[in-house]
Image (cartoon, rainbow, N blue to C red):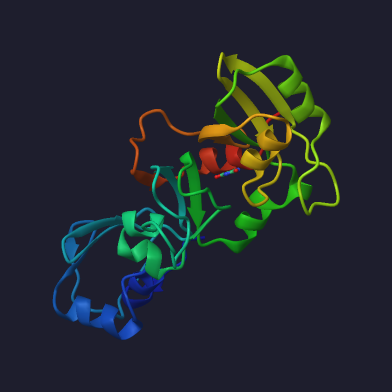
Length: 240
Ligand code: URA
């Protein structure tokens, strides 16, 4: 059944500021819903599928924020970055206000698929090693790829300070200096450390997929968009 909410609550839920500020936006006649100018912040609306316009910003209502982002190199996945700008600086303010978080961090120099959400359960589902959701990386190497390297990564390597060995779910040679590897978890610098432990060195790292969801080929570097329900379903499915 459709759920109606006051306009003020809807704006607040989307990250347009405090409840008071959202009221003011409506009173200042800065809010349209599906192209209709709104004047009453208490008006009840079913927001599902609505297009809001807030002070000129077009915004598709989303009960929960599930975002796909093509991460460029040179950005940290942190709200308080230490040496490089934050990926959050590339996203619109309402997303930050509603508290979206990266689903697992990528290093500042890693590029590719980054999911962000305000759904804590989803973060757990996608990052917990127990759920075995594979993350696939394209890895450029300093030394030529080899069957020995692939075998080591598949059998498992010992990382410093880790009790158990780390194994790739899948790994294959894709170029003279390139391999693709799937790992189920995201320990600190895991891919770089695994490759180093196997006797090579990562020069470039690009995440291609999470679960069965691939980085969309039409999403330019630095761009974001909402994830569709089908894409969300694919991301929560194991790769193999
Ligand atoms: N493993 C790494 O070493 N770095 C990343 O950014 C992601 C996985």
